[in-house]
Length: 219
Image (cartoon, rainbow, N blue to C red; front, side):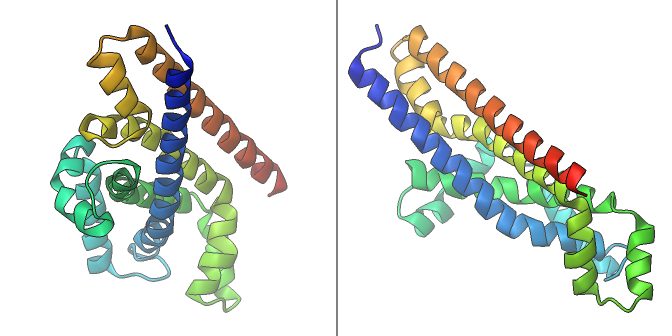
């Protein structure tokens, strides 16, 4: 039986999940976007060609993406504790969520920017545009719909990661599902948390798709 106290806990857990996912997505985008831009522009025959830097950055991104989130979350507990003063709760969960999402964002940004027509970039170069001008006035505007979808996909993935963070006291819906749904054999709580997570994923995906669609038509 779902009582008022449990409804309040579900509401608070949903807000915690949104805070974790929102903060993680924003922070990961702030770091991952420039990393993805560097990954693209330092490639051979690109505007900032630096093969060694490109390979090093690509290697770091690939390593970051290959580490399972649950292992990463445990491995950086000392770093999390130093950064936020604790290794449990919503604030602590934001740290591994951000760290896990940065290489993911970087690779998605790299993929989006590679889709920009090389002819457009060459035309900007022939008109004397500098690399920063090409990046911010040509590449990013051209790739903006794909970049929006990249951020959307990151947020959707972080919802799943945030639920996993509940396994070590990360807070949010995952924590509630484990403590009440699993450990106390409350199938109804487990079901409701799953439904809420599905609704969050669908809502974020629909919003991202709508924004990207408008940008496609605007371009």
